[in-house]
Length: 65
Image (cartoon, rainbow, N blue to C red; front, side, top):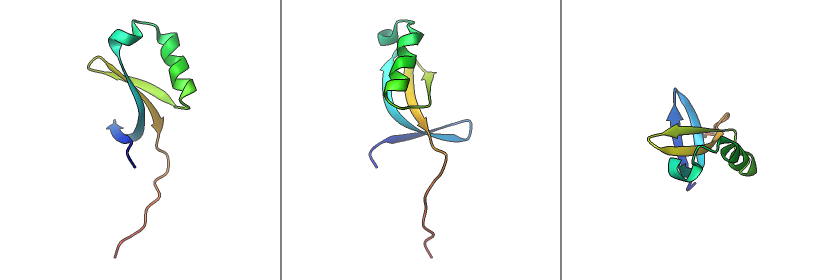
């Protein structure tokens, strides 16, 4: 898997796209459209960068013995 996974307040998210605050220019409606177009659940802003992410709700794993 090449996608970046981030953790925020104990929850995991897959980062689908990052957009700088300068590119958004305060147009939150456009940011919402990007989020919808990418099939993502939400976006976060941190240090001048918006992260458009998908929630990770289930983790498939195989126990190694």
